[in-house]
Image 1 (tube, one colour):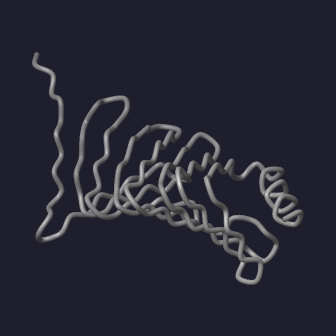
Image 2 (image 1 turned 180 degrees about the vertical axis):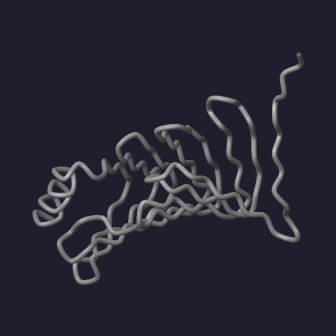
Length: 147
């Protein structure tokens, strides 16, 4: 237990993540953290909420990636864009968020709503890629101004 607390403090000291969870299971051998129940992860200006998030660590105990499942919510605040996203699954790896499964995204500034099969956000470039499928094409609701 002492090792787990020391480990979590070392993650926080890097300023990478602030983690809140009802249960934390640490698998030292495989460098995994399994967070269960009312999970919240804050990363810089972003926040992700879920009932289950699995965090993969590098051998030197830094965050490599994480996957959130079970009705996930993401509050993304980029340099040029801010979004609220709700999806079945959200993954973070290599500075990229990927939301999949009944994805609904709302642009915080413009109030535009997009539904899609998959939405990818590159946090380094602030580029958003929206993918549909044959059974679920992309749907965008824009608010247009009249002259």
